[in-house]
Image (cartoon, rainbow, N blue to C red; front, top):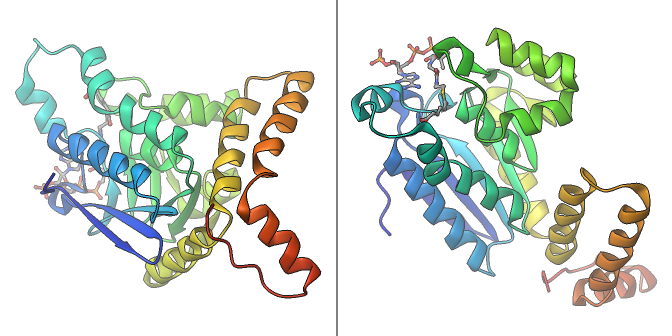
Amino acid sequence: MAYDTILLEQADGVATITLNRPAVLNAFDDQMAAEVQDALKVCERDAAVRCLLVTGAGRGFSAGQDLAAIQSRGAELSYRDHLSQNYNPIVEKMRRMEKPILGAVNGVAAGMGMSLALACDLRIASDKASFIQSFVNVGLVPDSGSSFFLVRTLGLGRAFELAATGERVSAEDALRLGLVNRVVPHDDLLPLARAWAGQLAGAPTRALGLIKRMMNRALVLDVEEALAYEAMLQEAAGRTADHHEGVAAFLEKRKPVFSGK
Ligand code: T3D
């Protein structure tokens, strides 16, 4: 599939998806949703991709749903159908893909754009980035996973506050709240994000994938179930080439070279 609204680049085990509608702060129309869905499938299938980096072109990360597109689509399209076809598959794929996904939040992440950032496994943000649950500002409710991620990250009170006020959260406050992992000077964002993604791409990919599967399930398991699930996934991790390489490298006092297998 040729892409018009995103860029997909790949180098050294890292695939980078750049949302590329900068004139509208990378707001999503249906074409962009379809292209992101396709790019995620490509990255998932390609064994050479061991980490995914998601960022935005220009001064925004993503301003969420393109509001002009909402107005032009009229009343005949149901919001539920639109979300089910366009955004939910993106978030589901990002959470199920057994490869690390790093969001490099270069500017404002609003509405579904904030959901997209929260669906990444890790977030590094520019000091110029900001986060807005802007759904309520246009009379809507959080979607594309925002309610799920916010309540789990912030707890009920703060999650409700962000969703109900639609106020802008600065990068610094996002770091304090645990919404992002790192905040860096704007000009350093992409070099530092690429370096971090490179490290993730050189990590034991199967173990990272199993960790992601484990963390997803840990949100809903009781302690006995979590212990049994950990043991089951450890069985799988223990059979990987990277586990054997990690142990051998330790005993031979050298740096491990993980193949992702
Ligand atoms: O079924 C469904 O589709 C429901 C799904 C809903 C999911 C959602 O995401 S709902 C929430 C949608 N997003 C918003 O409501 C955010 C709207 N945008 C803003 O509030 C502001 O633009 C920002 C706070 C994000 C940034 O403000 P600022 O002052 O930095 O930039 P700006 O001047 O407002 O925007 C720059 C341009 O981008 C501007 O165009 P112009 O005037 O230069 O030609 C603006 O109209 C355009 N733009 C920004 N956001 C959107 C947008 N155009 C279309 N849709 C947008 N979401």
